[in-house]
Length: 99
Image 1 (cartoon, rainbow, N blue to C red):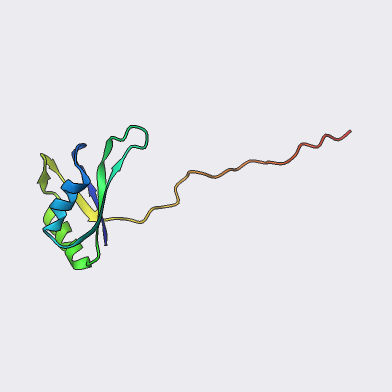
Image 2: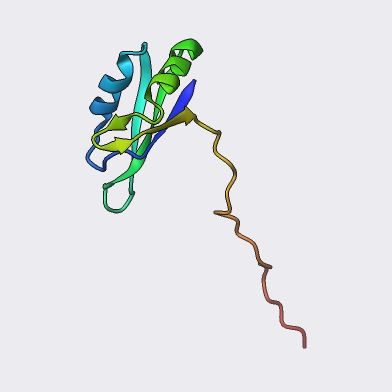
């Protein structure tokens, strides 16, 4: 189960998150999301457990708890949605002039 972890301090590292969540079970992966241009943390990340019960225990224990002076938001991550990006609409095509 993949967990969303929000309201992180901007200097939180992936190692910090792993250490925090490992006390609730075996952590498979950790990612702190950063801005593509600046490399600055966006204040949230994801932690993945292979055991759903361990993940649920982590949610129960850590959601709303203070971490670095901020109340953590911890819940099951929602799948990515398609979002609005990308489409190359328009009416392409060669302009053939008619005489």
